[in-house]
Amino acid sequence: MKGSIKGKWAVVTGATSGIGKATACLLSQHGCNVIITGRRAERISALRDELKTQYGTEVLDYCFDVRNRQACQMMADDLSKRGIVPHVLINNAGLAAGKCKIYEGDTEDWERMIDTNIKGLLYMTRCLLPAMVAQGKGHIILIGSTAGHIVYPEGNVYHATKFAVKALNEAINLDLAGTRIRCCSIDPGAAETEFSLVRFHGDAEKAKQVYEGYTPLKAEDIADVILYVLQTPPHVNITNVVMYPTAQRSVYVWDKSGLI
Image (tube, rainbow, N blue to C red; front, side, top):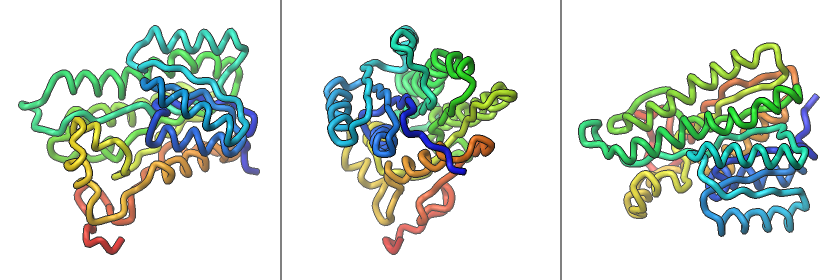
């Protein structure tokens, strides 16, 4: 029997664009109440209004950076005061910053990736998971990457953070043994979001070149998979999904003929 997310609460981090925004929209469309977080105040409030108007679900919005542990805890405390225990936590906030050889890397880029992709995920999980465990049910989704499975040149620190997400997914599942809470890492290949624009520090032309000659994944494709995982019956735990666009079979095998 298919599970239902209708009327449940889901936290979606990094909801101002890309996978996070697409996921918040799709969950709302299916009757889920969402708690959206992001760093960009105008975008987060605009999405809140859009979801309420279009789908009529309940929406709470919090503007903060997941790198700020105190802000993560403040959100968790506020939810507790409201009597809300999330059923779903989607740790989506993440980024790549820069692409260069390790001996030429920008340490500020490194810290930004480590603090967001690893520590931000840990902060959110630590702040919200205790209440979910006490509730006795729930689902955690981590947005990993195929970069957490195989390394390509000049990806070094970004790869390290996504390999960490892979390890944390496995560790969280072990720690949740004996509970009804499930954890899944969804690991996309090339997906056309703001990912490359952020990686190349706003260089739109360079970002565009990443997706030329083939059809990449879209944010909505990943959101569809998230919804599928969340709707599986309680006895089914999909722990990992690796997904590529059809034109990409690994980080090294592509068809950029434009036919796919």
